[in-house]
Image 1 (spheres, helix red, strand yellow):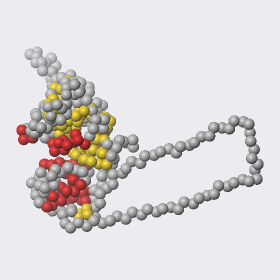
Image 2 (spheres, rainbow, N blue to C red):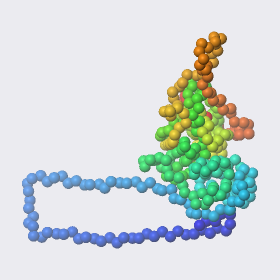
Image 3 (cartoon, rainbow, N blue to C red):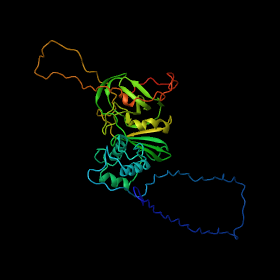
Image 4 (spheres, rainbow, N blue to C red):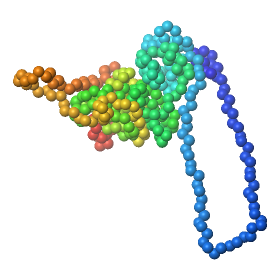
Length: 345
C-alpha cells in the first residue's frame, strides 16, 4: 500500500516461484532383436519445429494507494493545496495528464479528471468526489480495444466513451479525453456536404503538421492525420461529448507533445459506434441545402420543405492560446509532401 499526501508506506508483494523437479525417464533398449538392413530407400527424416508463441505483456495494475479524504463538494476548478497536489501526482503516475503537479486545480487537471470519469462511466463534471477518489485509489487499467494481433505501439480511440489511449510497447503511455464527430450534416469542406463522422476501423498514422493548420472547417493544432483529412489534434474546446467535424480533439497541453510519441505507420484503432447516418459512413454526400427562393404560392397543404441542418464552422482559437512563433519551423511540412486532403475539426 502506498500513502500519498502523508508519510509513505509501501508494502512489498511476495511472489512465489516454485521450481518443479524434472524427472528423467530412461530410454528402453532392445538387445534381443537382430539388426536388419534393407535395400529399400529409407523415408526422409523430418524435423518437427515447435510453434513459437509470443506472449503479449500485460499492463500491471498499480498498488492500492491512500489519497486525501474528500469532503463536502470535493475538489474542482479553483481548488488549491496539498490535497490537490496529491491527486495531480497520482493522476500523472497513472498516465493521465493533469499538467504541472503544482497543487492548482486548473483546466488541465479538470481534463485529466474528465478522462477518468469517461473511462469508468461516471458523471462528466470534471470534479473529484468520493467516487473518483476511490476509483483512483483502487485503480484498474482498461483492457485493450484492439484484438489479439494488436501492435505494441498504437492509438486507440473509443467513440463510445470519448477517450483516447496511447499504447507504447504494450503499455499505456497516455489516457486523454477526446471529442470526435458529432454526426451532424454540414457543408463547406472540399468534399462537399457530408456528415460529421469519425469512422470506426483500423487506420495508421499518415502524416503530421507542426503548429496551426488552417482549413475550410477550422484550425487544428499539431494535427496527426490517420484517415484522409481526419486527425488527432489539439483544440481549445474539448467538450465531454462528440462535437467535432470528424477529427479527434485533445486538450492543447497534450497536443503540445503528442506528435513526439507517435510515428508514421503506427496503428490507429477507432472503436465504437460513430455518430451520423444509419450506415455510419458519413460519405453519402447529400445535396447542399437549397438557397433558392420562389414567389409561387404552394399548391398543396403540405408543409414547405425546410433546408437541411447546417453546422457552423469553428472559428480559430483565440489569441490567448496563440502558439509561440518557433512552434512551426518555416521548413516544416513542404507542399510536395502534404497530401491534398481537407482538414476537419
